[in-house]
Amino acid sequence: MSSRGVLASTILSTLAALIAAAVAHARLPIGPEIQVALNPGSAKSAGLRHLGPCVAVTPDGAAVVGNASGLWLVGGGNARATGVSGLGCFTFTPEGLLMGVRDRELVFLDSHGRLRPLFRLPGVGMTLVPGNGDSLLLFGREDNGTWGLYTIRPGRQVSLLLHSPKPITAAAQTKSHILVVIEGALFLVEHDRLRLLAGEPKGTLNAVAADPDGHAIFVSDDRRIFRVSNGRVTVVADDLGGTLRWQRGGLLVFDPRRSLLVRLVGVE
Image 1 (cartoon, one colour):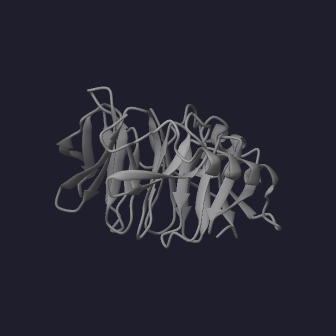
Image 2 (cartoon, helix red, strand yellow):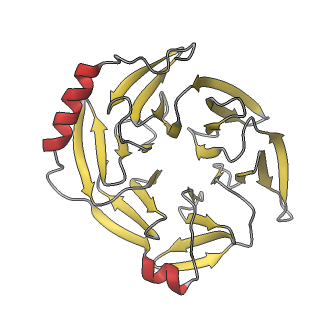
């Protein structure tokens, strides 16, 4: 139990049960349009193997994935090497600056194509994801054994949002809220406490994304994708899951195990 009340054993268990029941029976009336950016065949042709779980979106809407060999621009079944390597997780700022995690450093790509360190991180291999506007979210296991969630703003401004004794596996930010998946359940960060939105402690959720206005929140358990909006939970897709990112009116779904990257349109 953290000092900020990260997980209480009895957190809204009744609400969690109701949401679970809704998920079991709800479904969007019309399926989303699926646009394929990468599939196993195109990944094999491009020599893309052992992809990491991170996916980023450039300011002009291109998707980037990575493996031990480097980062790749993907789309339309094609893949092109960027020449950048050595990063774990990575993302882009609205101005197009590539930021990434290299071991226990936060780094950026300078104008000469070199990765330059910004500062040392509290743990190795932390996850970096886009926040809202020009902010970023950073989370992961720290050297002291707890999991931390931080916001990073221009000017090297870093703020701790919470520490959790349980694993943080995903985070996202809208204009007004920060969302986090802890030990398989989705929470809303509210000042010094967390409010359960979907799932239950020790649940199966492991990914989250949201449109910037916060009208629709998307979560996945690696087998299905759910949409949470106005207290309703609907199933967006079956037999699909992985890392989720919002991309210009569509939802990117990246499953590195299947070398599959698709964009779901019409889910907002």
